[in-house]
Amino acid sequence: MIRKERAILALEDGTVYRGYAYGHRGETVGEVVFNTSMTGYQEIMTDPSYNGQIVTMTYPHIGNYGVAIYDMESNKPYVRGFIGREFSSNYSNYRAQQSLEKFMQQHGVVSIEGIDTRALVRRLREGGVVKGVVVHRSHAHPLDPYGEFSPAEEQEFVQRARDHQDIDGHDMTQEVSTELPYAFPTLRHGKRVVLMDFGIKHTIIERLAEVGIEPVIVPAKTTAAEIMALGPHGLFLSNGPGDPAAPTYAHRTAWEMMGLLPTFGICLGHQILGLAAGGNTYKMKFGHRGGNQPVKNLLTGNVEITAQNHGYAVDLTSVPNGEFVATHINLNDQTLEGMAHSRYPVFSVQYHPESSPGPHDSRYLFDRFIEEINAFEGATGLPAEKNSTGKYGI
Image (cartoon, rainbow, N blue to C red):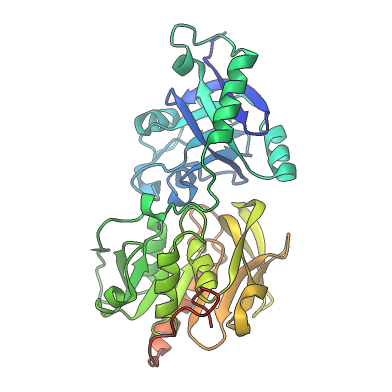
């Protein structure tokens, strides 16, 4: 029998799960969440929206098709850690270049396997997401990698989890956004759209290019004046990590751009639009993460199976004067999944229509965006400044 190095997952609520080391040997701390996707682990790991989080995969067997460079959603993994019931030691896939473990070791991703992920997910569903620490025995005790952690040592790591900074109130977009603007090369002339990068995925840029858009990606702190100086036909607000209430500079830019250009927001971009209009967001108990979330399109009555990754939601009732109306709702918990402005060509969804990984039901939204751009006839000017409430909404 092959001996495996010991590892633990210590949660801030005092729970400790004992398992085995996988990936890069070390220690990591973050918010522990779960994803219900059966495949797509590489896309999940390289999605900047997971920055600051340790992801638990609910599917019990992960890694059997390896890692392919073509499936990267950014230039590196952004997850703080990875948790699985069983990670494959071998892989079989003609597209793959390396195993999942080699990929984790190359990029410093600390992981743990062999724990009861069903029990962990049940705890997260019932009690909500919590902070946690994954630590390998070889990191804490290099001379005794196969030994057990003592109760005192386990409680030390529980305390480290409690002391870690919460994602709530934390602006994480600066950790993932591009530092300089850049253009995505296309082989055909199209409508120029400025993409505000709060942690954008590569596949989103590719989907926009496929429908005839020339994407120009800019940093998260780009101002409305700087956006308009690029001569765009549209504006896109990307996905990203952290508390959507924290990047107030993005709220201001989104508000100043409201009505000037056709605008499409995804995930964090959707939440920023709600906040820019004067609304509020709230943290969900355990969020939506996976490729099997049912969403109803209120405009057509159709049901879409969607890919999602978010822990916050927009409270549409808090948006003043009916500035936005609901277009999509989640059929599991009735939370808002999409909205459109009552006067301007501005719309957004809480989920990921680029579907990487996930079903393709919602890719029509990219076609809708280019249709809005083609139909746009102009705008009337910049909106008002902050009101007495300190928000940018009317």
